[in-house]
Length: 219
Image (cartoon, rainbow, N blue to C red; front, top):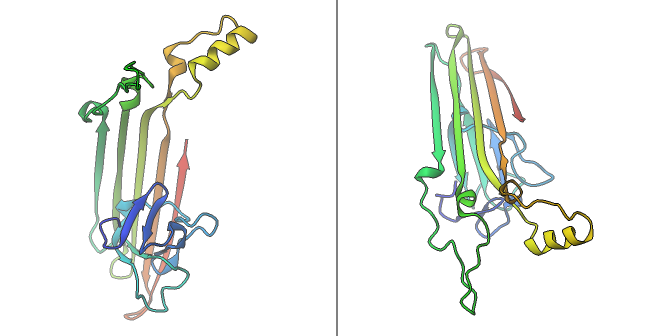
């Protein structure tokens, strides 16, 4: 989406034509998928379950309502008369990441300040794996498509308690409070799993009914 002219990415999504990201709308198979509380997408959708998508930034007709910003239209994948599927795996490893240019800031008086452990700050490992499968339930009549998408991320959560605060706590209450590497950077290991299932039934040569569903679990 961020490759579209007029779209600028930000920490909470993307803005379109100068509007806030909460003013965007998200449609999947013609149905709105917008979270009215926060403005983002309501249900998690895996990219492996999307056949194609479109970003409309401005000048869109009345059929795309509910947005002052951009409109994202997505069409989910469907099964065909041929059984097909594939697996996928992606890995991001901190070993292959370039370190920062300046990891040791220097104050005005020339003293070096180590804000956090460099190794911990750069530590990021992410694995995305899953598979898709689709095919006919009844040839030329009914079809199915399903996808499983899992993400495992391992990173560090850096300490926000300053050494001066630890010193004060030792003096006031806990003199033996240790200051270890575990306190400086703790492991953070979230696991996410997204599933999606779609069933299409051809009622006639001009009418088709579709049933879609999915789950998202973070553990």
